[in-house]
Amino acid sequence: MELNTISFSDFTKLATVIWVKGASSVKNYMRASGMVKIVPIPENSGNTREFSEVDTNEYLSYKGQSDQAARGTVQQGYTKTMTKYRIAENIGISYEMRKENKYPEVTNALLNGGRKGAQSIDLDLSHRFTFGTASSYTDRDGSTVATTCGDTKVLFYSAHELNGSSTTYRNRLANNPRLSKGALEGMGRLVTEETYNQLGEKKTMSFDILWTTDDPNAVNTAREYLQSTADPEGSNSGVVNVNKSRYKHVILPRVATTAAGAPDSDKRYYWGIASSANSSFYLGVWEEPHLMLPKAGGNAEDVQTDDWDYRARAGIGIVTVGASWIKFSSGDGEA
Image (cartoon, rainbow, N blue to C red):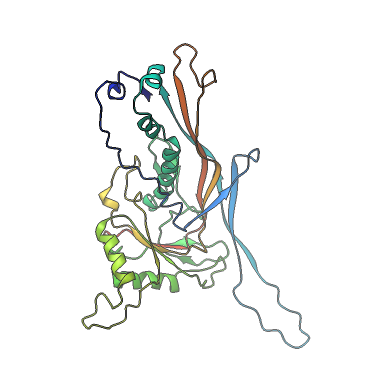
């Protein structure tokens, strides 16, 4: 992208122009959701990291008088390898644009590459849910992104495997209902009956997050069920709302999008619950989003044209090791 007086003549013409700055989202919705565990990775330490779950047995064994105590069981789960990738963009600004521009604050807004970096990371994180029913997807740049968990199954699946037991578990709600009181109870049943450690024992987790897309109906329904004093579906006043404040509602506006980041109505009713404490959804950060600024005579100035290049950069990796910490419904009513 190049900014010059030909493509953006309004920046330099004599007439005063009233600029209406476009809305820009700078909030890291998924990164700040509580479901993503962030791992800062130092320089000169390689471009990969391995992540693995480890469980022990849940209960102690009986010990008779003078008997030797039983040995605890430790079971490693599946492993996922995170590989770093970089995202980047250059914006060129001509000499004339720099010297004749009447609206430097507008130029600065256009050059806010740090914002783009944060939004790109949030989109990539969100797409792990967007494409959580597939083993991979083709991203906005045409690259294939693998989305499977450590057991090689898709994130939202009906028969996830355990590494120390033949037991399988599901984290996708049967029949994929939209968010409702009955559907929330169905999610609760997945928590009580389909949450295991790697040894096949029931594992108790605190599920504290209810996440939805930004669809108005989904958002309003979630707020109704979590904030109403009385039962939203009760016929009599004063009936207690058992879901009041049970979960923190997290809105994820980039989940219902295409790989390119355009709205995708097919995914508007995606929702689920999650355990922030037990999440195995990792973001490795080699290089936080930042903007590399040029200067006169520096290596970002073209000696032939005097143009400057502003360089936006970031370096990250994303993996989801296991799936027991999250429960999901596509909300389309399909079995």
